[in-house]
Image: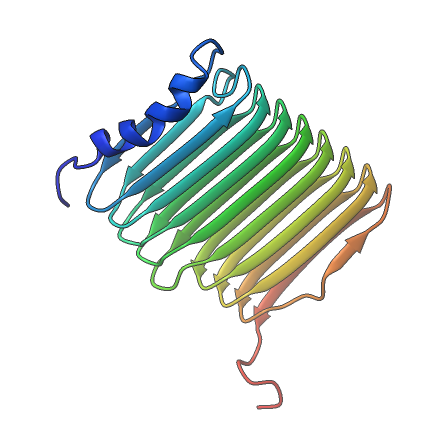
Length: 227
């Protein structure tokens, strides 16, 4: 692991946007250890990065990329990237009082994206890979939705879309090559999807209002159906 190399670069990336909003209270903290890491933050509006989660990027990897865009007020974010993988993390927040967190670790190149619009939404993605990276995406629009995706193993994929108010979803993938997807529209849906095994897949689970569903898949599916 190479020594700290890009604090000055990060400062330059932030200087223009922070100077333009000097009259508005905003906070950003970036710590980079390793080689060729990239951190980009763009903020407009008061109070971003000032809440309990703050506005933080920590990279202790090589070739990691973190990109933040916040337009609104009182939005917080946290990105933590470690291991040998060339991880990619993207957070895009518009609205007020949204919280987004991404944690990536391992040798595989993990890819995670959180997009939030509205008020009081919470989203988190945690990825830990051994060889092949995971992909995960959370899209939230509305108010007070909560979502989390946790992935361990190799090569898992998960996508979640929430469009409404008061929806909650929890996705967990343990194993290799698993796929899951969920869509929540309306209000007060509850969804829990868990996969323990390899090459498991679910059709897209869709909830349209006030429903609760919990699904657990366990076992091994063939790489090539019919074999």
